[in-house]
Image (tube, rainbow, N blue to C red; front, side, top):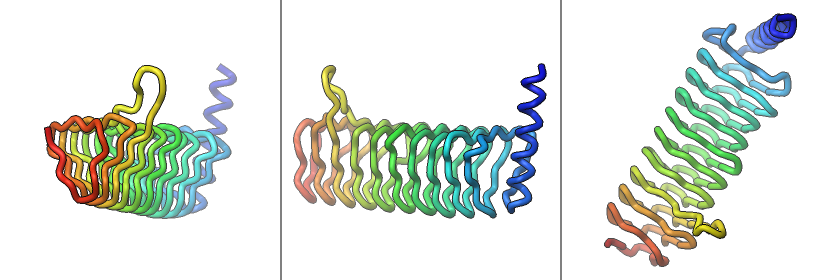
Length: 210
């Protein structure tokens, strides 16, 4: 009981310190915060948010209800939508994540990247303007600038023994329900038709379908 009481007082003090520094907390009593977390002014944090580890949140960021964030760097103007789970990720400016997204360790999102609902990433980089908007798994991958990853796309990065890398070139279009069987490279501007299982490299500006 004493420990819970001490934790409550500590959390209240940390929340007040944030608000005095220019952070807006919609429901301060529901925020869970580590003392090492750094939050800049003009950040908006909604209810039931957890910020732990050594996370750094830049000015103008919005963190919606129910998000859990650990050891992440989030740049200016990014929106983390409701109930997203982020750990060990680095996110550029004016990006959009979630709702219900999971960014695992080693995820790097450049500026204006969009990660949508029920998308999971792990050891994956998305270059500026790339999008994965729905229901996808991207593991051990590099997605080029302004590439579009369609709904239900997965990188098949594990062969039962080792992990392998998937590379998607700038401006490529990956159709819905596509399986990219790593190791594989999709060229710049390539178009992968919906429902395709890709097992070999696709040249730049080529069409692949099965």
